[in-house]
Length: 70
Image 1: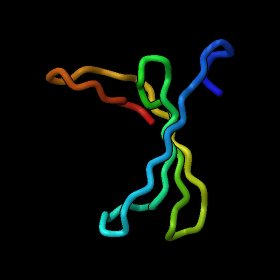
Image 2 (image 1 turned 120 degrees about the horizontal axis):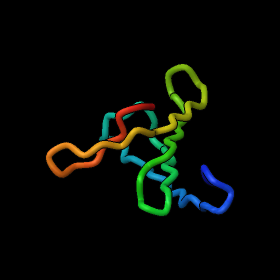
Image 3 (image 1 turned 135 degrees about the vertical axis):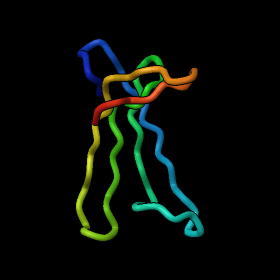
């Protein structure tokens, strides 16, 4: 998996404790070779659908790197 044919993404899965308010208890994050999130997948508990978000346009603000587009 990945954006380029030679690029492999790591796919860690986060499972949140029921005490954490979140839109979905289980979420997957697709990380590129630099450790940047390229995609974020989750199943919405409310509308019962899968939702993938692609992240891009990374910029640095006060030393923190964030995607500016999804």
